[in-house]
Amino acid sequence: MKLHLLNDGALRKLKHSVYSNISKYQSDDSSWIESYLAERNNTFISKIDDADVELVLPRNEDRKEFDGVNAKLFHSAFPGISAAMATDERLWATLCHGKFYTYMHTRWPVSVTQRTQSFDGIVNQRYFFYRGDPRKSIERNGLSRLWLSAEMTYDPDRDDPYELTKVLLQNTNFVFHLFGRKFSSNKQILQGTLEAVLALEKEYGKPVSKTPITEYGRRLNLIGGASLLDLWNKEEAEKNAYDFMRPFM
Amino acid sequence: MRIKNKLFPYPTVQMDNGVYKNAIFETAVRYQVEHNKFKLFCSAHINVPEIQALIDAKKAAYVFHFECARTYYREKVAFRSEEHCETIDGEALDRKLEICPMIVATEDIDSFSCDDLSDMFSGEEISFAKGDIIAIGRQQELTIVKEQDNLKKLSSIFYVDSYPEDVEYKHISIQPDDRQIGILIPKNDAARFRQCKDDPRRKHTLFSAFFFPALIAVVDLMKSQDGEQYSDSLWYVLLSLKGKEKGIGDVEQWQDRTSFEIAQILFDYPVTSYLKELATISEGEDSI
Image 1 (cartoon, rainbow over the protein chains, first blue to last red):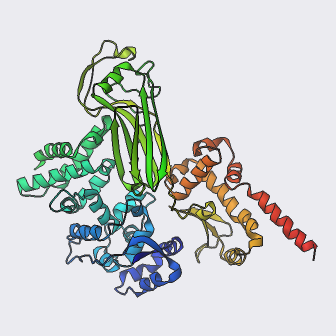
Image 2 (image 1 turned 90 degrees about the horizontal axis):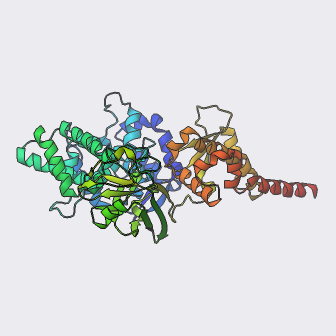
Image 3 (image 1 turned 30 degrees about the vertical axis):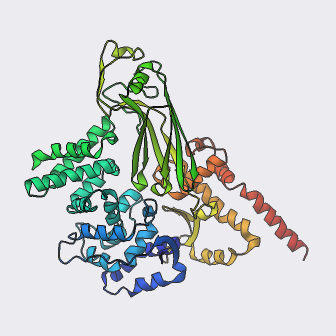
Protein backbone atom coordinates (compact mmCIF):
# COMPACT_ATOMS: atom_id res chain seq x y z
CA MET A 1 0.00 0.00 0.00
CA LYS A 2 1.22 3.47 -0.86
CA LEU A 3 1.37 6.36 1.60
CA HIS A 4 -1.49 8.84 1.37
CA LEU A 5 -0.14 12.37 1.83
CA LEU A 6 -1.80 15.67 2.58
CA ASN A 7 -2.30 17.70 -0.58
CA ASP A 8 -1.16 21.31 -0.90
CA GLY A 9 -4.50 22.81 0.16
CA ALA A 10 -4.99 20.55 3.17
CA LEU A 11 -1.43 21.10 4.32
CA ARG A 12 -1.84 24.85 4.05
CA LYS A 13 -5.09 24.78 6.02
CA LEU A 14 -3.51 22.72 8.79
CA LYS A 15 -0.49 24.97 8.88
CA HIS A 16 -2.55 28.13 9.06
CA SER A 17 -4.54 26.65 11.96
CA VAL A 18 -1.59 25.85 14.22
CA TYR A 19 -2.26 28.68 16.63
CA SER A 20 -5.93 27.83 17.05
CA ASN A 21 -5.14 24.11 17.33
CA ILE A 22 -2.51 24.36 20.09
CA SER A 23 -4.74 22.84 22.74
CA LYS A 24 -5.39 19.88 20.42
CA TYR A 25 -1.67 19.32 19.93
CA GLN A 26 -1.32 19.35 23.72
CA SER A 27 -4.13 16.88 24.28
CA ASP A 28 -3.69 13.09 24.30
CA ASP A 29 -6.74 12.80 22.07
CA SER A 30 -5.65 12.44 18.44
CA SER A 31 -9.10 11.89 16.94
CA TRP A 32 -9.19 15.44 15.51
CA ILE A 33 -6.16 14.88 13.28
CA GLU A 34 -7.17 11.33 12.41
CA SER A 35 -10.46 12.55 10.99
CA TYR A 36 -8.71 15.38 9.14
CA LEU A 37 -6.34 12.93 7.45
CA ALA A 38 -9.19 10.55 6.70
CA GLU A 39 -11.06 13.15 4.62
CA ARG A 40 -10.72 11.95 1.05
CA ASN A 41 -10.30 15.39 -0.46
CA ASN A 42 -7.39 16.16 1.83
CA THR A 43 -4.93 13.59 0.53
CA PHE A 44 -3.35 12.13 -2.59
CA ILE A 45 -1.64 8.79 -3.14
CA SER A 46 2.14 9.07 -3.20
CA LYS A 47 4.71 6.77 -4.82
CA ILE A 48 6.14 5.80 -1.43
CA ASP A 49 5.38 2.37 0.02
CA ASP A 50 3.86 2.43 3.49
CA ALA A 51 5.71 0.49 6.18
CA ASP A 52 4.75 -1.34 9.31
CA VAL A 53 7.10 0.29 11.80
CA GLU A 54 6.85 1.73 15.27
CA LEU A 55 9.39 4.08 16.77
CA VAL A 56 10.62 3.70 20.34
CA LEU A 57 9.02 6.24 22.65
CA PRO A 58 11.28 8.16 25.04
CA ARG A 59 10.95 6.86 28.58
CA ASN A 60 12.18 9.81 30.59
CA GLU A 61 13.38 13.39 30.54
CA ASP A 62 16.21 12.58 28.13
CA ARG A 63 13.93 12.52 25.12
CA LYS A 64 16.78 12.17 22.62
CA GLU A 65 17.74 8.82 24.18
CA PHE A 66 16.43 6.71 21.30
CA ASP A 67 17.08 9.11 18.42
CA GLY A 68 19.82 6.88 16.99
CA VAL A 69 17.68 3.75 17.25
CA ASN A 70 14.68 5.52 15.78
CA ALA A 71 16.68 6.96 12.89
CA LYS A 72 17.73 3.42 12.00
CA LEU A 73 14.17 2.07 12.37
CA PHE A 74 12.69 4.84 10.26
CA HIS A 75 15.31 4.90 7.52
CA SER A 76 15.34 1.14 7.04
CA ALA A 77 11.53 1.01 7.00
CA PHE A 78 11.22 3.59 4.20
CA PRO A 79 13.92 2.81 1.64
CA GLY A 80 11.72 4.37 -1.05
CA ILE A 81 12.17 7.93 0.22
CA SER A 82 14.65 9.60 -2.12
CA ALA A 83 16.58 12.81 -1.42
CA ALA A 84 14.29 14.69 -3.80
CA MET A 85 11.13 13.33 -2.12
CA ALA A 86 12.54 14.27 1.27
CA THR A 87 12.44 17.96 0.36
CA ASP A 88 8.65 17.79 0.20
CA GLU A 89 6.92 19.17 3.28
CA ARG A 90 3.75 17.22 2.49
CA LEU A 91 5.53 13.95 3.25
CA TRP A 92 6.87 14.95 6.65
CA ALA A 93 3.85 16.93 7.81
CA THR A 94 1.62 13.95 7.00
CA LEU A 95 3.81 11.43 8.81
CA CYS A 96 4.20 13.71 11.84
CA HIS A 97 0.44 14.15 12.09
CA GLY A 98 -0.48 10.61 11.12
CA LYS A 99 1.40 7.37 11.55
CA PHE A 100 3.94 8.85 13.97
CA TYR A 101 1.72 11.28 15.87
CA THR A 102 2.16 9.41 19.18
CA TYR A 103 5.94 9.42 18.73
CA MET A 104 5.91 13.15 17.93
CA HIS A 105 3.62 13.81 20.89
CA THR A 106 6.14 12.14 23.22
CA ARG A 107 9.45 13.20 21.62
CA TRP A 108 8.43 16.79 20.88
CA PRO A 109 5.71 17.56 23.42
CA VAL A 110 3.98 20.87 22.88
CA SER A 111 3.62 21.28 26.63
CA VAL A 112 7.32 21.90 27.16
CA THR A 113 8.78 25.12 25.80
CA GLN A 114 12.47 25.45 25.15
CA ARG A 115 13.88 28.81 26.20
CA THR A 116 11.77 31.45 24.50
CA GLN A 117 10.14 29.19 21.97
CA SER A 118 6.36 29.38 21.92
CA PHE A 119 4.04 26.40 21.65
CA ASP A 120 3.15 27.21 18.06
CA GLY A 121 6.88 27.62 17.37
CA ILE A 122 7.44 24.00 18.43
CA VAL A 123 4.61 22.76 16.22
CA ASN A 124 5.74 24.82 13.25
CA GLN A 125 9.33 23.62 13.51
CA ARG A 126 8.84 20.01 14.46
CA TYR A 127 5.60 19.03 12.72
CA PHE A 128 6.04 21.11 9.54
CA PHE A 129 8.76 22.79 7.50
CA TYR A 130 9.05 26.00 9.43
CA ARG A 131 11.59 28.13 7.63
CA GLY A 132 11.72 29.19 4.02
CA ASP A 133 15.06 27.42 3.76
CA PRO A 134 14.28 23.75 3.06
CA ARG A 135 17.71 22.68 4.25
CA LYS A 136 17.11 24.13 7.70
CA SER A 137 13.57 22.79 7.72
CA ILE A 138 14.58 19.21 7.03
CA GLU A 139 17.12 19.42 9.87
CA ARG A 140 14.44 20.58 12.32
CA ASN A 141 11.33 18.56 11.49
CA GLY A 142 10.89 15.78 14.07
CA LEU A 143 10.96 12.95 11.53
CA SER A 144 12.95 14.27 8.58
CA ARG A 145 15.88 14.95 10.93
CA LEU A 146 15.95 11.24 11.77
CA TRP A 147 15.79 10.27 8.10
CA LEU A 148 18.45 12.81 7.08
CA SER A 149 20.84 11.78 9.86
CA ALA A 150 20.58 8.16 8.79
CA GLU A 151 20.75 8.94 5.07
CA MET A 152 23.96 10.95 5.42
CA THR A 153 25.73 8.54 7.74
CA TYR A 154 24.58 5.15 6.45
CA ASP A 155 27.67 3.07 5.64
CA PRO A 156 26.94 -0.37 4.17
CA ASP A 157 30.55 -1.45 4.76
CA ARG A 158 30.22 -1.40 8.54
CA ASP A 159 28.96 -4.31 10.67
CA ASP A 160 26.17 -1.99 11.77
CA PRO A 161 25.58 0.36 8.81
CA TYR A 162 23.90 2.81 11.19
CA GLU A 163 26.74 2.96 13.73
CA LEU A 164 27.74 6.48 12.66
CA THR A 165 24.08 7.59 12.77
CA LYS A 166 24.07 6.79 16.48
CA VAL A 167 27.32 8.71 16.96
CA LEU A 168 25.85 11.76 15.23
CA LEU A 169 22.60 11.72 17.18
CA GLN A 170 24.11 11.07 20.61
CA ASN A 171 24.76 14.78 21.02
CA THR A 172 22.40 17.44 19.65
CA ASN A 173 25.40 19.77 19.28
CA PHE A 174 26.89 17.39 16.72
CA VAL A 175 23.76 17.67 14.59
CA PHE A 176 23.67 21.42 14.97
CA HIS A 177 27.36 22.11 14.33
CA LEU A 178 27.90 19.54 11.59
CA PHE A 179 24.69 19.89 9.60
CA GLY A 180 24.86 23.64 10.03
CA ARG A 181 27.88 23.73 7.72
CA LYS A 182 27.72 23.08 4.02
CA PHE A 183 30.67 20.68 3.95
CA SER A 184 28.47 18.18 5.80
CA SER A 185 26.72 17.46 2.49
CA ASN A 186 29.92 15.65 1.57
CA LYS A 187 29.41 12.18 3.02
CA GLN A 188 33.14 11.42 3.03
CA ILE A 189 33.84 14.40 5.28
CA LEU A 190 30.83 13.90 7.53
CA GLN A 191 31.40 10.18 7.97
CA GLY A 192 35.17 10.63 8.34
CA THR A 193 34.57 13.16 11.13
CA LEU A 194 32.19 10.79 12.92
CA GLU A 195 34.67 7.91 12.52
CA ALA A 196 37.22 10.10 14.31
CA VAL A 197 34.72 10.80 17.11
CA LEU A 198 34.08 7.09 17.46
CA ALA A 199 37.79 6.28 17.53
CA LEU A 200 38.52 8.97 20.14
CA GLU A 201 35.65 7.84 22.35
CA LYS A 202 36.88 4.27 22.24
CA GLU A 203 40.46 5.32 22.93
CA TYR A 204 39.69 7.65 25.83
CA GLY A 205 36.57 5.95 27.18
CA LYS A 206 34.58 9.20 27.34
CA PRO A 207 32.34 11.12 24.97
CA VAL A 208 33.69 13.84 22.68
CA SER A 209 32.24 17.12 23.89
CA LYS A 210 30.76 20.03 21.96
CA THR A 211 33.92 22.17 21.84
CA PRO A 212 36.15 20.05 19.57
CA ILE A 213 33.29 19.54 17.12
CA THR A 214 32.50 23.26 17.03
CA GLU A 215 36.16 24.18 16.61
CA TYR A 216 36.70 21.52 13.99
CA GLY A 217 33.72 22.82 12.01
CA ARG A 218 35.29 26.28 12.07
CA ARG A 219 38.63 24.88 10.97
CA LEU A 220 37.07 23.07 8.02
CA ASN A 221 35.36 26.28 6.98
CA LEU A 222 38.74 28.01 7.01
CA ILE A 223 40.47 25.30 5.00
CA GLY A 224 37.52 25.15 2.61
CA GLY A 225 37.98 28.86 1.97
CA ALA A 226 41.31 28.26 0.24
CA SER A 227 41.14 24.75 -1.15
CA LEU A 228 38.68 22.10 -2.25
CA LEU A 229 37.83 19.90 0.75
CA ASP A 230 35.91 17.55 -1.48
CA LEU A 231 39.17 16.09 -2.71
CA TRP A 232 39.59 14.33 0.64
CA ASN A 233 38.60 10.70 0.85
CA LYS A 234 37.02 9.31 4.01
CA GLU A 235 40.37 8.20 5.48
CA GLU A 236 41.88 11.68 4.99
CA ALA A 237 38.80 13.27 6.51
CA GLU A 238 39.03 10.95 9.52
CA LYS A 239 42.74 11.58 10.02
CA ASN A 240 42.31 15.35 9.89
CA ALA A 241 39.42 15.24 12.36
CA TYR A 242 41.23 12.84 14.68
CA ASP A 243 44.45 14.89 14.72
CA PHE A 244 42.54 18.09 15.36
CA MET A 245 40.23 16.81 18.11
CA ARG A 246 42.68 14.61 20.00
CA PRO A 247 44.25 17.43 22.06
CA PHE A 248 40.77 18.28 23.38
CA MET A 249 40.35 14.83 24.96
CA MET B 1 29.19 25.78 -4.06
CA ARG B 2 29.52 29.22 -5.55
CA ILE B 3 32.84 31.04 -5.71
CA LYS B 4 32.38 34.76 -6.24
CA ASN B 5 35.15 37.39 -6.31
CA LYS B 6 37.26 35.29 -4.00
CA LEU B 7 40.88 35.97 -3.21
CA PHE B 8 43.22 33.02 -2.79
CA PRO B 9 46.66 32.96 -1.16
CA TYR B 10 48.08 31.67 -4.46
CA PRO B 11 47.47 32.60 -8.12
CA THR B 12 44.17 31.42 -9.55
CA VAL B 13 42.81 31.87 -13.06
CA GLN B 14 39.53 33.70 -12.59
CA MET B 15 37.56 35.99 -14.84
CA ASP B 16 39.19 39.44 -14.90
CA ASN B 17 41.12 39.10 -11.65
CA GLY B 18 44.39 40.21 -13.25
CA VAL B 19 46.48 37.43 -11.74
CA TYR B 20 47.26 36.01 -15.18
CA LYS B 21 47.66 38.20 -18.26
CA ASN B 22 45.89 36.26 -20.97
CA ALA B 23 44.71 33.06 -19.34
CA ILE B 24 41.29 31.79 -20.31
CA PHE B 25 39.65 28.75 -18.74
CA GLU B 26 36.75 27.84 -20.98
CA THR B 27 34.12 25.47 -19.60
CA ALA B 28 30.60 24.44 -20.46
CA VAL B 29 28.00 22.00 -19.24
CA ARG B 30 24.89 20.91 -21.08
CA TYR B 31 22.52 18.19 -20.01
CA GLN B 32 19.84 15.85 -21.21
CA VAL B 33 17.38 13.80 -19.22
CA GLU B 34 16.80 10.11 -19.89
CA HIS B 35 14.51 8.08 -17.64
CA ASN B 36 15.02 10.45 -14.71
CA LYS B 37 18.81 10.30 -15.11
CA PHE B 38 20.59 13.59 -15.77
CA LYS B 39 23.42 13.16 -18.26
CA LEU B 40 25.83 16.07 -17.89
CA PHE B 41 28.22 16.72 -20.75
CA CYS B 42 31.18 18.66 -19.36
CA SER B 43 33.88 20.31 -21.44
CA ALA B 44 36.96 22.25 -20.33
CA HIS B 45 39.97 23.89 -21.96
CA ILE B 46 42.80 25.98 -20.52
CA ASN B 47 45.00 28.06 -22.80
CA VAL B 48 47.98 28.20 -20.41
CA PRO B 49 50.58 25.57 -21.44
CA GLU B 50 52.16 25.44 -17.97
CA ILE B 51 48.81 24.60 -16.33
CA GLN B 52 47.98 22.14 -19.11
CA ALA B 53 51.33 20.50 -18.38
CA LEU B 54 50.29 20.02 -14.72
CA ILE B 55 47.16 18.20 -15.92
CA ASP B 56 49.15 16.07 -18.37
CA ALA B 57 51.61 15.18 -15.58
CA LYS B 58 48.65 14.10 -13.40
CA LYS B 59 49.48 16.76 -10.81
CA ALA B 60 46.22 18.58 -11.46
CA ALA B 61 42.83 17.75 -12.96
CA TYR B 62 39.65 19.33 -14.21
CA VAL B 63 37.26 19.05 -11.30
CA PHE B 64 33.57 19.82 -11.75
CA HIS B 65 31.78 20.28 -8.47
CA PHE B 66 28.04 19.58 -8.38
CA GLU B 67 25.81 20.69 -5.55
CA CYS B 68 22.09 20.65 -4.92
CA ALA B 69 21.63 22.34 -1.54
CA ARG B 70 18.02 21.17 -1.12
CA THR B 71 18.85 17.48 -1.35
CA TYR B 72 22.30 17.62 0.29
CA TYR B 73 23.78 16.33 -2.97
CA ARG B 74 27.44 17.29 -3.17
CA GLU B 75 29.81 15.43 -5.44
CA LYS B 76 32.79 16.18 -7.59
CA VAL B 77 34.10 14.54 -10.71
CA ALA B 78 37.75 14.74 -11.71
CA PHE B 79 39.01 14.12 -15.25
CA ARG B 80 41.96 15.02 -17.47
CA SER B 81 40.59 14.83 -20.99
CA GLU B 82 38.77 17.93 -22.21
CA GLU B 83 35.39 16.25 -22.28
CA HIS B 84 33.58 14.11 -19.77
CA CYS B 85 30.05 12.77 -19.33
CA GLU B 86 28.63 12.32 -15.85
CA THR B 87 25.24 10.82 -14.97
CA ILE B 88 23.30 11.81 -11.85
CA ASP B 89 20.15 10.09 -10.65
CA GLY B 90 17.24 12.52 -10.76
CA GLU B 91 16.09 11.35 -7.34
CA ALA B 92 19.20 12.97 -5.89
CA LEU B 93 18.30 16.40 -7.31
CA ASP B 94 15.56 18.95 -6.88
CA ARG B 95 15.00 22.29 -8.60
CA LYS B 96 18.57 23.58 -8.94
CA LEU B 97 22.00 22.11 -9.49
CA GLU B 98 25.00 24.38 -8.98
CA ILE B 99 28.04 23.53 -11.06
CA CYS B 100 31.46 24.92 -10.33
CA PRO B 101 34.18 23.93 -12.86
CA MET B 102 37.75 24.17 -11.61
CA ILE B 103 41.30 23.01 -12.17
CA VAL B 104 42.54 21.64 -8.87
CA ALA B 105 45.95 20.44 -7.68
CA THR B 106 45.61 16.71 -7.03
CA GLU B 107 48.96 16.56 -5.25
CA ASP B 108 51.37 19.05 -3.71
CA ILE B 109 53.13 21.04 -6.46
CA ASP B 110 56.39 22.89 -5.89
CA SER B 111 58.23 25.32 -8.16
CA PHE B 112 55.42 26.27 -10.47
CA SER B 113 56.24 29.14 -12.76
CA CYS B 114 54.35 30.54 -15.69
CA ASP B 115 55.12 33.20 -18.31
CA ASP B 116 51.52 34.36 -18.29
CA LEU B 117 51.49 35.27 -14.59
CA SER B 118 51.16 39.00 -14.00
CA ASP B 119 54.21 41.05 -13.08
CA MET B 120 53.44 40.96 -9.36
CA PHE B 121 54.45 37.29 -9.42
CA SER B 122 57.54 37.76 -11.65
CA GLY B 123 60.48 35.68 -10.52
CA GLU B 124 58.45 33.97 -7.82
CA GLU B 125 58.20 30.23 -7.54
CA ILE B 126 54.70 29.24 -6.71
CA SER B 127 53.65 26.15 -4.81
CA PHE B 128 50.23 24.58 -4.63
CA ALA B 129 48.99 22.17 -1.98
CA LYS B 130 46.70 19.28 -2.82
CA GLY B 131 43.20 20.70 -3.15
CA ASP B 132 44.28 24.21 -4.14
CA ILE B 133 42.17 25.76 -6.87
CA ILE B 134 44.34 26.69 -9.87
CA ALA B 135 41.52 27.92 -12.10
CA ILE B 136 37.79 28.60 -11.86
CA GLY B 137 35.55 28.42 -14.90
CA ARG B 138 32.08 29.75 -15.58
CA GLN B 139 29.77 28.64 -12.82
CA GLN B 140 26.37 27.46 -13.93
CA GLU B 141 23.06 26.74 -12.33
CA LEU B 142 20.91 24.13 -14.01
CA THR B 143 17.17 24.13 -13.52
CA ILE B 144 15.91 20.70 -12.64
CA VAL B 145 12.33 20.16 -13.70
CA LYS B 146 11.17 16.60 -13.65
CA GLU B 147 8.65 15.07 -15.99
CA GLN B 148 6.51 13.89 -13.12
CA ASP B 149 6.20 17.31 -11.53
CA ASN B 150 2.48 17.76 -11.11
CA LEU B 151 2.76 21.52 -11.04
CA LYS B 152 4.15 21.78 -14.54
CA LYS B 153 1.14 23.63 -15.92
CA LEU B 154 1.86 27.28 -15.37
CA SER B 155 -1.59 28.27 -14.11
CA SER B 156 -1.34 25.59 -11.43
CA ILE B 157 1.46 27.41 -9.70
CA PHE B 158 -1.38 29.52 -8.25
CA TYR B 159 -4.14 28.70 -5.82
CA VAL B 160 -6.97 30.99 -4.82
CA ASP B 161 -8.10 31.19 -1.22
CA SER B 162 -9.93 33.62 1.03
CA TYR B 163 -8.35 35.54 3.89
CA PRO B 164 -8.72 33.97 7.35
CA GLU B 165 -11.96 34.74 9.22
CA ASP B 166 -10.47 37.49 11.36
CA VAL B 167 -8.92 39.46 8.46
CA GLU B 168 -11.07 42.07 6.76
CA TYR B 169 -8.95 43.22 3.82
CA LYS B 170 -10.74 44.43 0.72
CA HIS B 171 -7.77 44.04 -1.58
CA ILE B 172 -6.33 40.98 -3.31
CA SER B 173 -2.81 39.94 -2.30
CA ILE B 174 -0.30 37.26 -3.15
CA GLN B 175 1.31 34.87 -0.69
CA PRO B 176 4.21 32.81 -2.04
CA ASP B 177 5.17 29.56 -0.33
CA ASP B 178 7.63 26.86 -1.24
CA ARG B 179 5.59 25.31 -4.06
CA GLN B 180 2.77 27.63 -5.04
CA ILE B 181 1.65 31.23 -4.89
CA GLY B 182 -1.56 31.97 -3.03
CA ILE B 183 -3.94 34.60 -4.37
CA LEU B 184 -5.81 35.72 -1.29
CA ILE B 185 -9.16 37.39 -1.76
CA PRO B 186 -11.88 38.68 0.59
CA LYS B 187 -14.36 36.08 1.79
CA ASN B 188 -17.34 37.38 -0.22
CA ASP B 189 -15.26 37.50 -3.39
CA ALA B 190 -14.12 33.94 -2.74
CA ALA B 191 -17.72 32.74 -2.77
CA ARG B 192 -18.31 34.50 -6.12
CA PHE B 193 -15.04 33.12 -7.47
CA ARG B 194 -16.13 29.58 -6.67
CA GLN B 195 -19.43 30.23 -8.48
CA CYS B 196 -17.65 31.31 -11.66
CA LYS B 197 -14.52 29.19 -11.72
CA ASP B 198 -16.05 26.16 -13.41
CA ASP B 199 -17.90 28.16 -16.06
CA PRO B 200 -15.95 27.63 -19.32
CA ARG B 201 -17.41 30.87 -20.78
CA ARG B 202 -15.62 32.91 -18.07
CA LYS B 203 -12.31 31.09 -18.18
CA HIS B 204 -10.24 33.88 -19.73
CA THR B 205 -12.13 36.57 -17.84
CA LEU B 206 -11.22 35.00 -14.53
CA PHE B 207 -7.70 34.39 -15.75
CA SER B 208 -7.27 38.07 -16.56
CA ALA B 209 -8.95 39.22 -13.36
CA PHE B 210 -7.03 37.01 -10.92
CA PHE B 211 -4.03 35.22 -12.31
CA PHE B 212 -2.68 37.84 -14.71
CA PRO B 213 -2.47 40.72 -12.18
CA ALA B 214 -1.10 38.26 -9.63
CA LEU B 215 1.59 37.23 -12.09
CA ILE B 216 2.56 40.88 -12.60
CA ALA B 217 3.00 41.19 -8.83
CA VAL B 218 4.99 37.95 -8.77
CA VAL B 219 7.32 39.11 -11.57
CA ASP B 220 7.79 42.36 -9.65
CA LEU B 221 8.80 40.31 -6.63
CA MET B 222 11.20 38.14 -8.64
CA LYS B 223 12.90 41.21 -10.09
CA SER B 224 13.23 42.92 -6.70
CA GLN B 225 16.09 42.54 -4.24
CA ASP B 226 13.90 40.23 -2.14
CA GLY B 227 13.39 37.94 -5.13
CA GLU B 228 16.56 35.93 -4.54
CA GLN B 229 15.18 34.48 -1.29
CA TYR B 230 12.46 32.73 -3.30
CA SER B 231 14.79 31.40 -5.98
CA ASP B 232 14.56 27.84 -4.64
CA SER B 233 10.75 27.81 -4.69
CA LEU B 234 9.11 25.60 -7.26
CA TRP B 235 7.03 28.44 -8.75
CA TYR B 236 10.16 30.59 -9.15
CA VAL B 237 12.05 27.77 -10.86
CA LEU B 238 9.14 27.07 -13.22
CA LEU B 239 8.58 30.74 -14.12
CA SER B 240 12.28 31.34 -14.80
CA LEU B 241 12.37 28.22 -16.97
CA LYS B 242 9.28 29.45 -18.83
CA GLY B 243 11.05 32.78 -19.39
CA LYS B 244 13.96 30.99 -21.02
CA GLU B 245 11.61 28.95 -23.20
CA LYS B 246 9.90 32.16 -24.31
CA GLY B 247 13.22 33.73 -25.25
CA ILE B 248 13.43 36.40 -22.55
CA GLY B 249 16.30 34.74 -20.71
CA ASP B 250 17.10 34.49 -17.02
CA VAL B 251 15.40 36.53 -14.32
CA GLU B 252 18.48 38.80 -14.27
CA GLN B 253 17.76 39.68 -17.88
CA TRP B 254 14.16 40.64 -17.07
CA GLN B 255 15.30 43.96 -15.60
CA ASP B 256 15.20 45.56 -19.05
CA ARG B 257 11.49 44.91 -19.43
CA THR B 258 8.48 45.90 -17.35
CA SER B 259 6.77 43.30 -15.19
CA PHE B 260 3.59 43.99 -17.16
CA GLU B 261 5.29 42.97 -20.42
CA ILE B 262 6.98 39.90 -18.92
CA ALA B 263 3.71 38.66 -17.40
CA GLN B 264 2.04 38.94 -20.82
CA ILE B 265 4.83 36.96 -22.47
CA LEU B 266 4.79 34.25 -19.79
CA PHE B 267 1.02 33.85 -20.04
CA ASP B 268 0.88 34.02 -23.86
CA TYR B 269 -0.79 37.43 -24.06
CA PRO B 270 -3.89 36.63 -21.99
CA VAL B 271 -5.70 39.90 -22.76
CA THR B 272 -6.19 38.81 -26.37
CA SER B 273 -7.99 35.65 -25.24
CA TYR B 274 -9.95 37.70 -22.72
CA LEU B 275 -11.14 40.14 -25.37
CA LYS B 276 -12.14 37.29 -27.69
CA GLU B 277 -14.16 35.79 -24.85
CA LEU B 278 -15.82 39.13 -24.12
CA ALA B 279 -16.65 39.55 -27.80
CA THR B 280 -18.26 36.10 -27.89
CA ILE B 281 -20.33 36.89 -24.79
CA SER B 282 -21.41 40.23 -26.32
CA GLU B 283 -22.41 38.52 -29.56
CA GLY B 284 -24.50 36.08 -27.55
CA GLU B 285 -26.24 38.91 -25.71
CA ASP B 286 -26.87 40.80 -28.97
CA SER B 287 -28.59 37.82 -30.53
CA ILE B 288 -31.13 37.50 -27.70
